[in-house]
Length: 254
Length: 254
Image: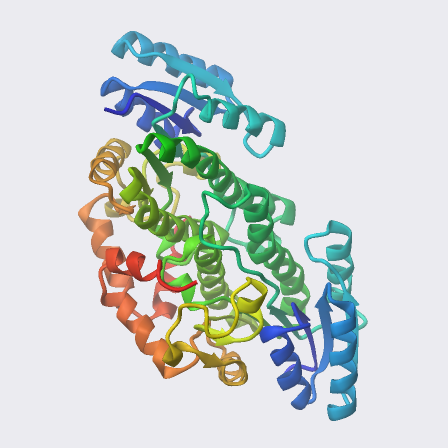
């Protein structure tokens, strides 16, 4: 697969899992996150375990100057990046009307504007080389109305599908990965301890399997990856269920 | 019932048509756009013809200070706004990789961040009064992937569905209006002459029909409005055909 992958949000959750699985396949890594010490620890572990090169780029992607540093690395012609994994994100509570609008704007910027900028920068050198993989962590929330989070993920799914259709013929694939509820520290960071997220046990996925399945879909050049048969079936249902019912489902859980 | 509507992008196209039809129903208007001369002409005509009060607010919604003025008007407790129509928008060429990234970011701001901010501002007073209508002009490209434009419209559709489910019980409805190709000056502004947009004639809609049907759906409290039987059928089809086929359809026309 790819020789060098740049992963945002790499210090934890899906980002860290992509780092582990790609390193195990011999891919060199550029890890991006504001959490420098977590990145450094992960990087050291992966270097030792898999003998790959791992760069650490501590950056807050919402900070213009720091985002520029990441873009410079992404477009460095001397050290090409073959795979971009957009994984950085965070959750807000669903009380849109009660949330501070500045938090909502930060949420929109991190989930949409940042990947938009990174994909725009990555796609040109990839098209010139005639190869590249762009992987964006979206969510099944893109298909079930789910606050501004679901709306941002719908942006990512819509764009990835279209871009994959447009650019895969020229060697650059775009894949939107749509996991369901997955055990990572995402919900804990939202202040919801494990077991208290209001989600039934069968709906939980394992991060390792989600990433493994998504990487198979990336290798196949799919525009959309929905890991696990459970969520594939659920998604098929959303295509036939009335929209009103989906809106009700979207209010369940955290 | 509803008394005053604030419409963005009101100087032309679907926005101006909302202004005409709402004035004809006796609503007072606040018209927002950059083009002050066009707004004034429309305002005088509507005031004369329908005896309604029409305010003109010329503002560029991606300029924070100008947007703040609109938000102050939107939340003025002395002159409440009963209906917000988020309509301002523009198109970019589909060659994403060649578009200037700052144009893409402005496009995202105007199509997503601005309506999100205005909706957030309008919701508070509307929920307090227990009534209000928010109308988001999206597009069928919210369902059929089509560049960053389609992705922004997918954001709007997803958000509107969710918000309508969440807030309609408290008296505030949110409707995403999803027109297909509609005869306005939108395509001309993109530099495409009428008849040269690469779209078959049967796919064109009349702007009056689009807005009239949208207003019926708004009155019913629908979360999504897809004007015309043709496009309802097309969107229903996209739920059944594979995503790859839908993406190829999204490549048609401009």
